[in-house]
Image 1 (tube, rainbow, N blue to C red):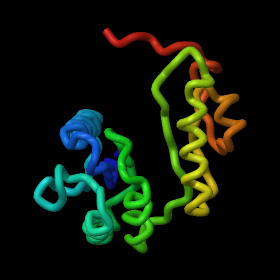
Image 2 (image 1 turned 135 degrees about the horizontal axis):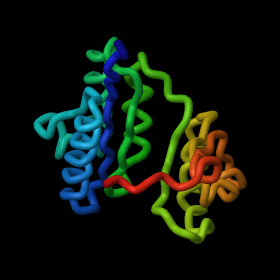
Image 3 (image 1 turned 120 degrees about the horizontal axis):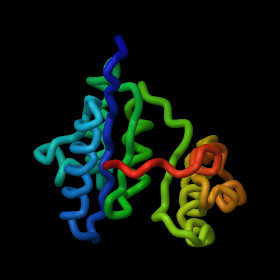
Image 4 (image 1 turned 60 degrees about the vertical axis):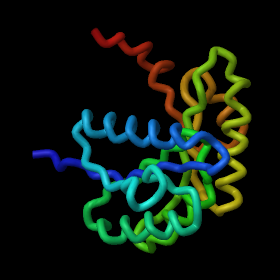
Length: 169
């Protein structure tokens, strides 16, 4: 029998963006992961505003939560529904002492023009350099060349290898 995976979920937020984006993003990731059969460990809206990480205090709350559940957590998913506070996210993971942050991943908005992905890849690469992280997972079949130019160490090219996925019915 296959073990049910548990993910620590960090929802990033910034105070000057509309807070409803963090709430909606949190609700959506919880729904998607739950539907897929995964368990989650995530801050509650009572612990931080909308259950999101926005400040160093929020990062500490998240690190404490992950520390309490360290035996259960198989991986971490970070979502930035309103371009969340990346430094607080990195601090939350690093402060947990039991989780090792080795890299970052992004999926920019899809476009036929691969160059439109470049600013997202550049920002992630700069963040990885600032925090001495070795791995960057970015770039898919339509924009992997740009991702490699910007420092990707992991790319996802399933469509290029296997063709497009069938549309769900």
